Image 1 (cartoon, rainbow, N blue to C red):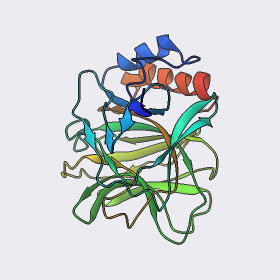
Image 2: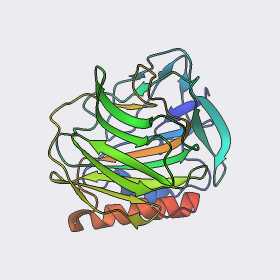
Image 3: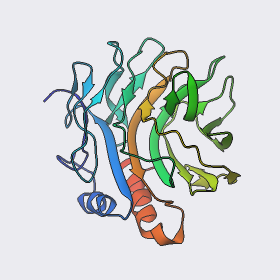
Image 4: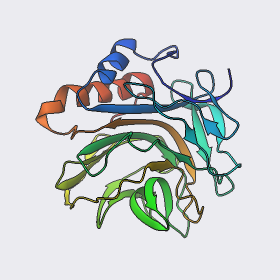
Length: 249
């Protein structure tokens, strides 16, 4: 089977927790799941051929020919990751409508950022033309931190460069929230951004603000997973990260 990104529950790698996967899929507000894995996916010819979700989603189409490299045994537990560099100019847009960021949403991202350079690096974001509408990024010359920008607001949180990190990003309709490796950041007030452009893995299509590092998983919800109403689903995701990768989330 060609290497790439596929529904992580359709053919489960050995060692993953089938029960937890099913619980996460069935959690209220579940919107989608993307996972890089060389053995269980279809990522070839410049296209990501499948996208996690409760029903079939449209194909994600790459923007450039130079793809990120798929690295075997990159993640604890022997799983794979996509490695982005300045030379990997391919960007991977999620289908429009997978996640409506004008309403409350939550993202759990498993990433390994490289050491920061002299310019901002964007791992995951939403863009309208040259305008950044939302972005998980490494600031220029950052020291042990990343941030998430949403509209006019930015939340900052600690990160370990050169290591795997499990990062939660949440917007509850009024505030940005973040938690990295089990440590909660201070909430930041954030008004809604009404733009509906899709999220893109790997930075904007211009390639100016590239991502340098590795990406393994993205789990998406269209609710505030930090709220007491969704505590069970939040704990299931954290248990999945701990059981599969040995990471606190």
